[in-house]
Each structure stands twice: as structure tokens, then as C-alpha cells.
Figure 1 (cartoon, rainbow, N blue to C red):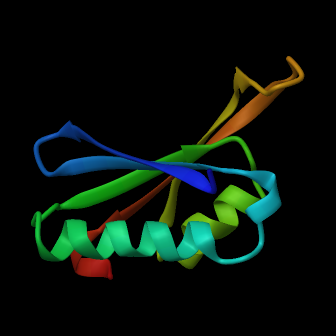
Figure 2 (cartoon, rainbow, N blue to C red):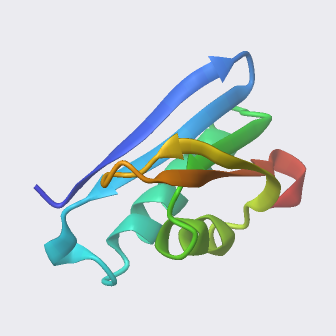
Length: 100
């Protein structure tokens, strides 16, 4: 499996997007192309008002969020633990329909 895209309603008109991709397929554009297609479909066909994402990875995941046009909405400092059990910041990004 190459990867997985999460897209679920948070409340009316607001959806969360997330992704998990096999490391063998990182840096090949699959995450961006997949997420971009979901975002475009959501805004054009589902008439979604807002899409948001959260991540603890401040490089790859945040980079993808920015590439999708999302904007930083906040950082919760030392909010959760990473895979090694260390405290990590949680980055929140969002995109409004009118911003795309």
C-alpha cells in the first residue's frame, strides 16, 4: 500500500484531512497529488467551507500543508507525545474555500 488519506467531517462544512504514507513512497508527490485532489473535490463538489489538518512533524507534514495552501492557525506547545515518547508541539493549519 502506498498510503492512506483521512477525510472526515468535524462539523457541518468543516472537514479534517490527514495522511499516512509508506516511507518507500515519500518525496515522490503522492501525498500532495492525493490531498490536492481531495481538497479540490471537497470545495467544488461537497461545498465544504473549511479544511484543517494537524501534525507534530514541523518539516514534511507542515511543508505539505503549506503546499496545499493551508495557513498556520496555531501551535499547541508540548501538546502530545511523538513516537519516541517525547513531548511535541502540535501544529494546526487550515484552508477556507475562498482562500484557494
